[in-house]
Image 1 (tube, rainbow, N blue to C red):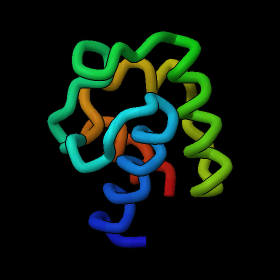
Image 2 (image 1 turned 135 degrees about the vertical axis):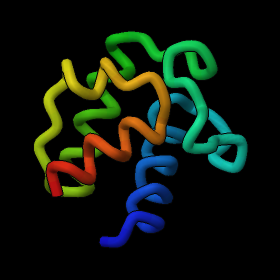
Image 3 (image 1 turned 180 degrees about the vertical axis):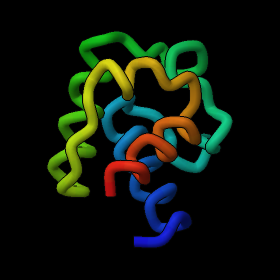
Length: 79
């Protein structure tokens, strides 16, 4: 999976988890500030990422990401 495909997949999973319009998401979208990312939603997002991409991402690492782009970086490191 290349970077563009990974970004698209993570954006799709973020949109589903946070019940938001995927077309409004960018790599600079702030997970906590723009999406209201609670810890419970982050648990769900990490679970979705792990299931869909067959990768292990620690919740603490994902929760520390400020933007979707940072989250994609962390997921890419694990692939």
